Amino acid sequence: MASGLGLCGLLVSFANAFADGAARAMALSATRQYFDNLGQASFIAAGLVAAVFVDLCLRFLTDGIAAAYRVVMLVMAAFLVLSPIFGQMGPLAVFVALQQQGAFNILFFVIVARAMAARRADATGLFCVSWGMMTAGQLAGWAVAGLFGALLFAMPNAGMAVALVSVVLVSVAYMFVLPEVKLSELMGIGTDGVRGEDGAGLEPGD
Image (cartoon, rainbow, N blue to C red; front, side, top):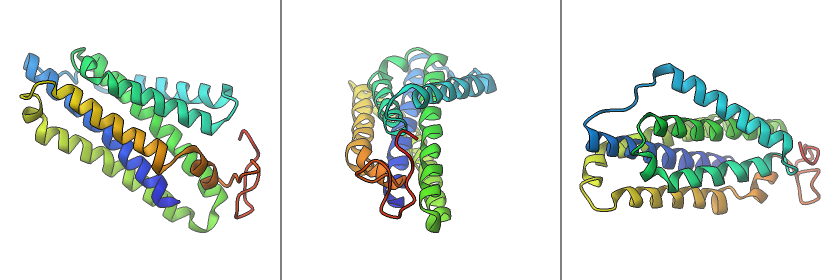
């Protein structure tokens, strides 16, 4: 279970960082300007928007974390599909990328916290694997975009290719690596919606 959660974090973080880095390379190639010029304000504002977005999902969606997970992944996939367009929009692209990654990060660690509470025996390992793989995914995505950015955007329709790869990675993470059924099991919610196999389940909707 820890490996599934960690692999999900790795794939999604890589996809978002890769698309973000590629969009920056696209803008740099087109304008000869690196557009990350919002500074700390962009991080703060994007973090606040991401926190409010996740909080609203958790409060008002009837299925709780599972529904919030579904919405965050769908919104991120939509952003990735549109990333070639965002790449031409300067600082707005940076803000949207930060907001999407921030929303995923916040929800991801809400899930990790719930899983740690349900599976106390391996809580430390679960946290370390999840954190490490998510961070590795972000670093790898930026590194790959940096290495191949110039090459990619010398090719026709490279932006769409990057978007396609990123969306495929997010889709694989959501549908196969950590689908909602496995997510519920990880947090200790069994098929009856209440108790997991370890007896440390959570109440439905929590």
